[in-house]
Amino acid sequence: MAQLYWLTQGTATIETLDQQWTMTPASVGWIPAHLEHKSSVVSDIEAFIIYLPITHVSSLNSQAKVIASNSLISALIERIKSFNFKDLTEPQQRLVDALVDEIASSQSNDLFLPLPKKDNIRRLAHWLMSHPDDTRSQNELAAEFATSPRTLSRVFKSETGINFSAWRQQARLIASLTLLSQGMSVTSTALSCGYANTSSYITAFKARFGITPSQYFD
Image 1 (cartoon, rainbow, N blue to C red):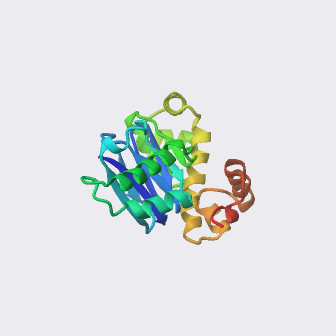
Image 2: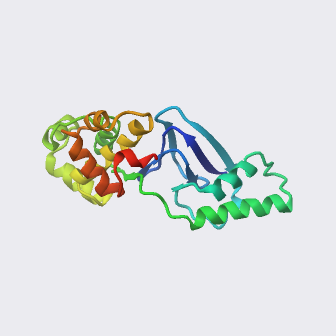
Image 3: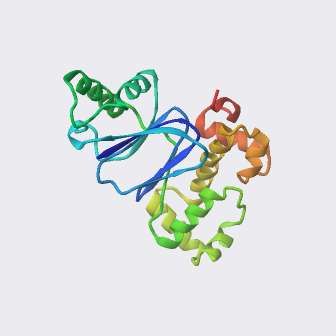
């Protein structure tokens, strides 16, 4: 069975072998059948999970994705979530096809982090994702996780495609979305995610998302 996550409140993550996606309100997560993954609740959520037989989703590829929902997707999910997929009528099948086509044609959002595969480096990545306020240097973190700064840099670049400092910046910004969604002030969010001051956080956030933190959930 493939899985379709529809999040209407809170934040959650979906992690596969090579990346972690963050779901915020009004987003849809697609997990292909047989793809090893785990999902975690980051803050209190309201969500639906729909299990879709492979025969109904052949037009979707084998890659996980998270997309922004829209009025059409939301309306289709509202209709489809109570269907008996073992015995769909023709009109029901057309609605499922429409939803699958809409998801297939939608662009993935950018709330994901590529993950390193090397065990100790992956543990470090998980630590930083859950502790964005950790301001220790790369050298200090390397020592804590039994590696060298040079190896840390090399593994992040080769296994995630980006350098360690850029990855860490992305991890902090994505982590900040959970705090903002809970109503935390921009200043408190900045300090909770390792930024020295509010202005540096706003500058980084706007460079990443194109809008300010206070505008993100408007």
